Image 1 (cartoon, rainbow, N blue to C red):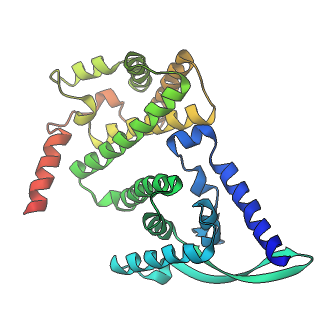
Image 2: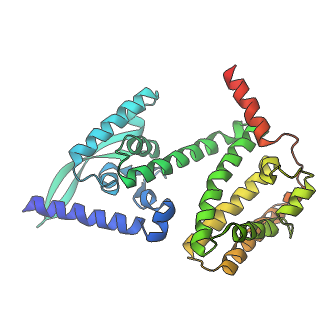
Image 3: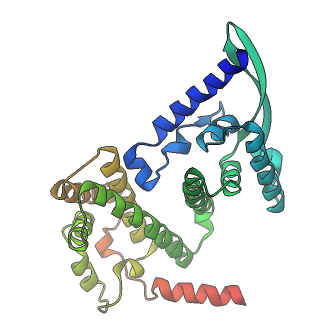
Length: 299
């Protein structure tokens, strides 16, 4: 009977985690909510996850099967020359199994990197694992970018942020689609509104002209790191606002994108920064930098 009560508690936790994490809108693009809903923060401000909760979130019914995945993650951690103890902390904790009785179970406190390794070594036939692999791949890259950003030169900063723009523009396109923007023409208008807000009324064509680009050259490929960062902030904040506020309708979505762009512009002004349209246009395109980086890598 006690075992059944314990299993019942695990099932209740599963329902809590999954119901909190996967609303219909969130499942369409798999936002952060699944893993962030079970994230913990200790007294030092360090984030961590419990393996038992991650097991449920990843839809592994039995701990013994999930431990096999964790063991693969151990090996991957060692192979990448990282200390297992830095990312996987074994703990024992008591769980209430009813009638005032408790039971000690094995658990682990996991770093974000440990979660990443576990997900990457999970069964990718599970939809939740496949989605998680994409999530942690993006998040790990973002964290690396944040930690080492100051060490990058201008060209590498441009490459890093431009790659992030590609990812977030896809997410923004999906959020816009959920808001009711379904065809290419409408999405072009939607994007233009964001530019107009950020660039003081200038649309994509105006920016293109101002940068003196040829017909086939894209404005995002000819932005410096500061200008790209402003556009990345515009895109991520619009994406989040559309989703969180469940905005629907073309006009409302367009207005939202414009207002977010304008707010970013206002923030730049308040900080005494240079307006994006007044920032210099780099001579090299992103494609040129990529080709040069590839050559250097080969050498």
